[in-house]
Image 1 (tube, rainbow, N blue to C red):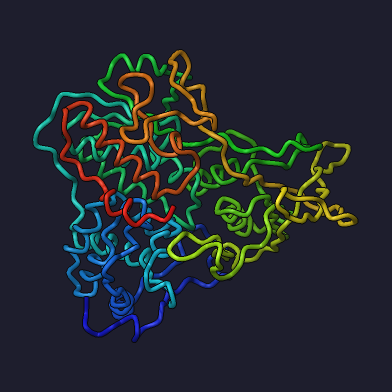
Image 2 (cartoon, helix red, strand yellow):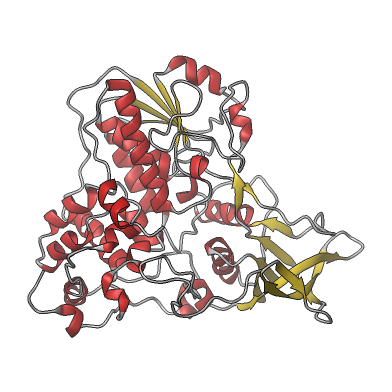
Length: 486
C-alpha cells in the first residue's frame, strides 16, 4: 500500500445519496458514485495488515487489501482481475451485502472500517465502463450435462463456474425472469434490474441455457431431471415464510413480506399482476420483523405513499457500539438504521403481537400488542402494557423456515431437522447419487454473499465428481480455519 498512511489522514466517507424527498418518488437506486479523488482516498485507508481478517470476514474469501492497493494505484484491470478471482457477481454484493468483511477490518478495532463494499462496487462498474468485463469462452467441452434448479445467486454462481469448466449447464427457474431473489425480492431502489439483466446476458453469451416458467415438482419432476443429466444442483433457496399464527390471521390486509415486495418488482417492470393488488397509499402500515426484509417493506411503503409506517421487533433494541459480548472481529449485532428508516418509520422493540383486530367485513383495522421483557428463560409480558394500534396493512417479515419440499416429490432426498436439504458439508452431495445442494436450500436463510460462495464451492465439488479433479478456484479455507472466530 501507499506510504501515506491513509488511515491516519482520511476518515471513512460514504458516497452521497439523493435526498429523501426526491428518491421516495421513484424506484431507482439513489447511492451516488464517489468522485475519483474520494475513491483514491478511501482505498488508501486500507492498512495492508499483516493478517487481513477481512479475508476471514468475507464468505467468499475476497482478496481485499490487494484490490484496494490496485484501486489506489488506479490499476483498474488488476483490481478487476483480483476481485473476480473470488467473486462472480461483485455488482450484486457491492450493492446488497451487509459487508461482514468490514466488521472484521483490522482498522475497525479503533477507527471506522474501510469502505470495502463501496470500493468493490466501484471496481466492477469501472470495469464494465472500460470494457474489461467480457464473456468467458470455454475452449473444451466435456460432454457432461448439469441441471441447476433455481436461478438465484447460488444457482447462477454454480452455473457460471461449471460452464467455465466445460460442462453443458441448464438452469431451471419457475418465475418468468432469471435472477431469483435478485429479480423478485430485492427492491429496485437497492438493486435496479438492469444490473441483473446485464449479468444474465453475459452468462447467456458464455453458453449457459436458461429455462423459465419451469417449476420442479409441478410441471417437471426432479426424477425426470435426474434421469437425463449427469448431475443436479438444488439451489432453490429458502422460500417458505415464517407465519404468525395468532387470532385474526385470516383478516384481509395481512401479507407475507415477499408477496408485497415481489409484486412491486413486477409493477416496476410493467409486468401483469395476476394476484390481488397490494397498495398501501394513504394507509397505516405495520411491518412485523426487524431485518432487511422488513426494511425493504418500509422503503416500498414509503414509495407507495403510506400515511404511516411502524416497525415492530420482538427482540430488544441492539446496542449502537460493540460490547464484550461481540468482540472484534466477530460480526456485531448492532443497531442498524437503513436508508429506508431514514425515509421515515417509527420503530419499536420488545413488542409482541397478540391478535389481529378486524371489522365485520373481515378487514384488518388494528393489532393488539404487549410490551415484553427478556430474561434467561425467554421473555414475559409486561403487565398493564396491552394496547390496540390502528393499522390497515400488516407485512410479516419474520424470515423463512426452509425450502419448498414439493420439488422433491418421488425422490427421497434427505431433509434435516430444520427442513433444509441435507447435504455433505465438504462435497455438497445429498443422499441421492448425482444430486447436490447449495445456498439457502442447504444452509438455511442466509446472505447473498454466502449464496454465491456456496454456489462456487458446490460447483467445484460437482466438477471433481464428474472429472475426478477440478481446476476451479476455491477460497483459501486454510487461512479461514486458522483465524476463524468460533
